[in-house]
Image 1: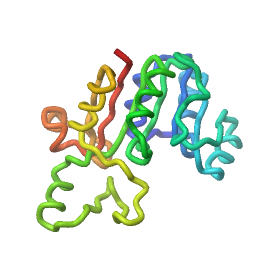
Image 2: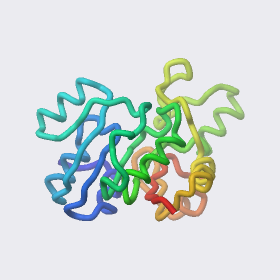
Image 3: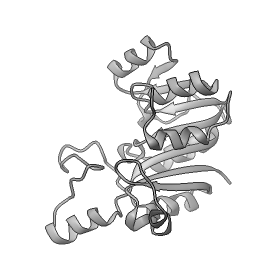
Length: 199
């Protein structure tokens, strides 16, 4: 099974045989790949019961839980890594979840769409409407994204919450990267990929 490029990047940050918690694990493709290829001992959290059932059919350890409830069921430093892809913007209290992620895991890996990308800015400036892009495909009235942020917003949140940024990579909607995106991340990066830890 071939991983999406952003998931492939994340998987390179995860050491073999690590304990991993995958938040909003979806169909479990990342968790399944890391379990098979890197010997990861993994657990997933997913709100969609059908996706939970799919994961269980694949032999993955997944629990049905709403991330809005936080991670109180998990102890401090229970995992080496806590991973969350494309879900930070869909929770009502991302600051609490970020705090929980670095409490529960030695490191956290997070991806989210960058609302500061130039196409988003252009759509707002010229069209005067909430943008619809490949990265943000839903109209404002039916979007699951409740807390959109920019790269600068996220990095400010990390500073407020005493979270260290260990690594950052920006990719486009096809999950490709280039040097210009890394130099001007808030303007040119469509999807942000961060590796963070508690200070």
